[in-house]
Length: 110
Image (cartoon, rainbow, N blue to C red; front, side, top):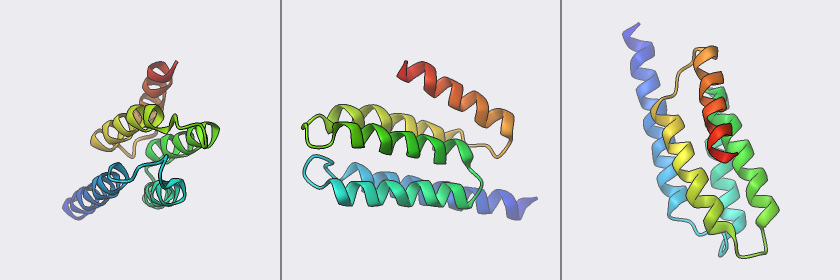
């Protein structure tokens, strides 16, 4: 059990590092780099079974693609960046916890 907990902590630290790198990238100035970093977060989360985080990253990307080229990326990145970091902070592998997290995100975005 301790090994799984330690592995989870390492994955969470990796995701936070990826979020930090994402936060240092300006979407409006460098959309390709931003989207590649976001994809790395999604892929890492999916690989480790953190479905809620992967889904949030996918939704984040879709929102960014809608505003790309309109210089409105900052509003999207501010909101989703906070949501993504919150999701990493409370990430659970349990499916019901993931569903609750996604419902919370839907309410925040609605």
